[in-house]
Amino acid sequence: MKKLLTIVAVAGCMAVQTYGQGTVNFVAANITNILTGQKAELGTTFAVALYWLPDSATAPTSADFGPQSVAYTTNMSLAGGVNAGVVRIEGITPSGAPAWFQVRAWENVLGVGTTWEQMLVSPGPGRPPLAGTGNIAKIDTADPTTSPPGVPPNTAITLKGFVMVPIPEPSVIGLGVLGFGALLLLRRRQ
Image (cartoon, rainbow, N blue to C red; front, side, top):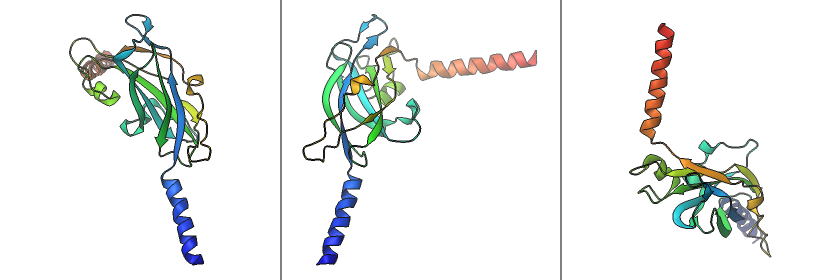
């Protein structure tokens, strides 16, 4: 019987480690539309996503946050921001541990995708869509498995506002790189 209890206790600890989680209070403010110079419009014109990565000794870069890093996506619920309330993030181990976060916002009315990644590869017709990323911040999450559950920190304090600017199409970027390379070759020959 003692052996069975030990096995159950070890399995329970492994389950807690595997299904770690944390909560944050997802508040992002001061997201500005560069075309109007005003706060981004409330409603479905702009989408906002909260990205996260596990804690590490060195800060990640924006490139480190991929589609697997999305914790929560919503539309603007305030003029110039979002107040989504408490967001539970699965995978933070141990539960309530710190993690790295970044907020991303993009225009989703020009026929572009419903995610940041889709918007980058399918910018839609007409002008390029507006998009922007916030700073990367390390935030202590709350542990929802405690009794009573931990209180999520206010992320609005560390996540700064940002300006959304037109994102050029990938082909324009490629042509620019090729043109720059050609200029370097011409200069080298002279």
